[in-house]
Length: 190
View 1: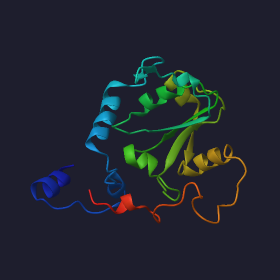
View 2: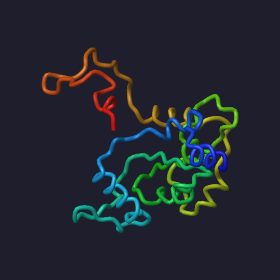
View 3: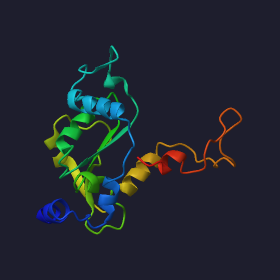
View 4: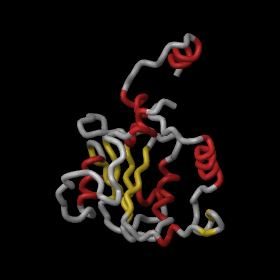
């Protein structure tokens, strides 16, 4: 930590470039108002128990979400602690919830591609709904070497349906394409 304080803060040098810092610096170009709304949601609406959240005068009932869920946590995540993420498994109405615990911190838990020799994750091989007790889940979880990405890709593939050919051209008569990829907003300077 001290090298960042000395080099970046005191000396004014830019940090050395590496992949995680690149992803961490990916700006979203949100307006101040929208960012304020998001911060309000994050600070005041914890989604920790059923029936606690109301938006625009309407109660939000997560138990009505019945689709299969894939929830990811990171063992050393300091922003979204994995035990708090695990509580999400109990809020939804899905009968098929997969919780994966990646052996890494906040950004590294997600940016954990195949080929990383240090990568590993924990997952329960028991299908269905995870137990309410996080320690019970952890005792029944299996440690798997490698990135969780291939496991997730198989999870998605099993629920995605039949592959179809990509369209020959973008848009339609009703919705013509506006700008070539990646889109004009990517090139806008903040």
